[in-house]
Length: 89
Image 1 (cartoon, rainbow, N blue to C red):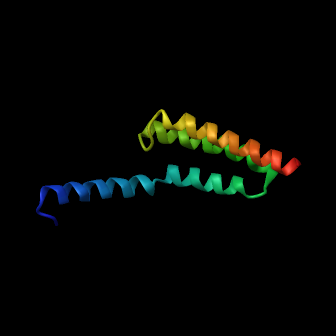
Image 2: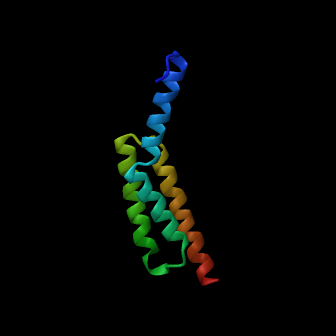
């Protein structure tokens, strides 16, 4: 256990970052993105809807900033659109 104040704070920050990174909500979003990048065209749209719900839930819980979720959703839609165009070309 650290005795110095800054070391204690660093430990608290590391613990909260670890919890945030290992959150089931965000892990689900990352997994959905990885699945969407695969060439499974039929399910891509459904996965985007799932990822959007997951990101909105993460924003509500405070795991990501509330203004960050819409940007990530927009990036998701752009990714799906780009992959769809690449598949048809």
